[in-house]
Image (cartoon, rainbow, N blue to C red; front, side):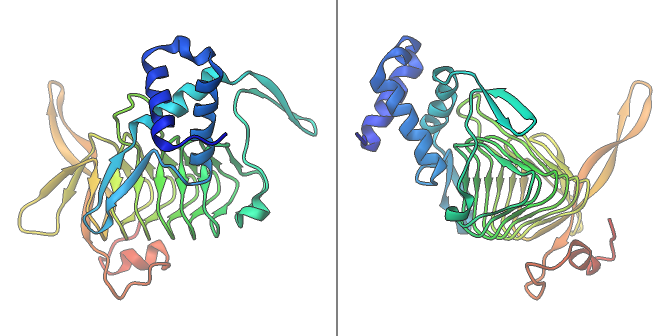
Length: 278
């Protein structure tokens, strides 16, 4: 029997406070219904409140349900020909009916939402993640647990999008619509990349990374946040240590993506306006 949202939330919150309730059938059913709703995109671990202002909210109770899903699942052996795994989590299936193109050997876990029109090259998408329509997760890219990836995003080869489950109040990584994330870039620790931004190859964005806007007369610094339409490349800044002064990695905002720049343009084309090649 399908439960309403208030009932699901109440059962999940109760089980979070008292793990003994995980043995009760009603609690298990509630947790499984929440994970199923996340898998179908009905519920999200984080969702936009105002996309124009890049405001999002974290749905802590949904994250709690995903965390509680692990202890109620049993380990089992899974096989595909000669390949073998031993895990608690199911994989997503029936991609044809979902309208998702999945290239071998792409893997998405059950409990991750992949929207119609998305493309998974050989890559990995973890439970709780949300990958919206028109997005490509390119070869060897990973989308961590609960990460939120918008529409028409390109996660280039080898991109690492970090995951987060605990602490439950922590925001997941958010990549908004029409972003281009260059090869081998890393975005972790709840970093927020706003719409139509371009991250050059090898850019690293963490919760503590110095993200420095160098387009004005004076540098402007952000942490864990890249403003809309930003063009970002790897950089360094000098820092004094007891043993001397050394360059420390940072990210440099070198300009804004122009309205005339096609959202599907290549990374090199997007950077050419600023005389940079990475």
